[in-house]
Image (cartoon, rainbow, N blue to C red):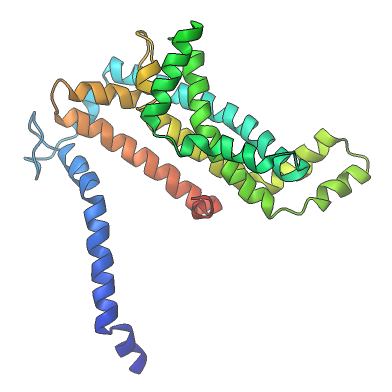
Length: 267
């Protein structure tokens, strides 16, 4: 009985209520968007006037939105794969090989996390225009790699810092070459960091607007930029529907990562 009374103390009740209010305040925009996507009217209204899924059907049957989704997925996959390769190599060199000026190199790699994304987008636009390669899909991929590599390096270095590399050395002693030892011994040990870094990279690339909007060509458009430009012509429940899909997909990625590898360790 004493334990039950202590568990329900006024201080604890007030603390739980305070946290609940803060969480509700933070999630309120998401709740509003999701509710608006089910409205039966042709304009946004909260609470929704009737319930319908026709806006989801309209968005998913729209060739422009499907093309934008395809471009976003393709771009995010390319950026993620390249970031994983480069980020893993950089992390291994910085942690294992003890390269000169490792701290300076690590800070330079992490720099995109500090600079505003709009500044990076404008700088890359000016750079690509100067060297004459503006408007290519490859330049967009490289730009996304620049902003996603830091997430891979951060997560992989966190994993490598707690890895016992004597196991890799033992494999080398038993006859494995450097590549075989890294592939069969080191990679399985740092797999949580690779998965976390890959998920970070994919989500950041897929949702990016500030960098992407400066570098897109006239033939392709990503989903976030499509939503951003569609808002200029008016907001209707179809915008809320596609935004809700992005929210659910991103949330599913985060839940998957947390359940599988403990996503909070790399956040």
